[in-house]
Image (cartoon, rainbow, N blue to C red):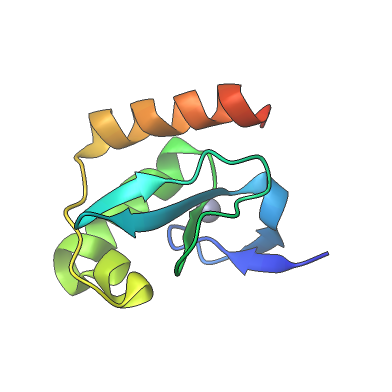
Length: 95
Ligand SMILES: [Zn+2]
């Protein structure tokens, strides 16, 4: 099973347990395909509010999303990002 690292908590998990994001038109965009197959570099987050908060905090300090995706991306605030993840969980049947 391919393991991926959550940019929030830093733990490695199976890809299917995480939500994948890619850069699209300069924005952090969720990969809502079943297998996480949208083209391009991906960045991963656990579908947990603590991970989202922690990742956003790191992004404000060190632009971690832009670093991981190798391009400057606009990252939504907590409310919007969490809403996106909730939606992704519903679509992909994650927890
Ligand atoms: Zn995490």
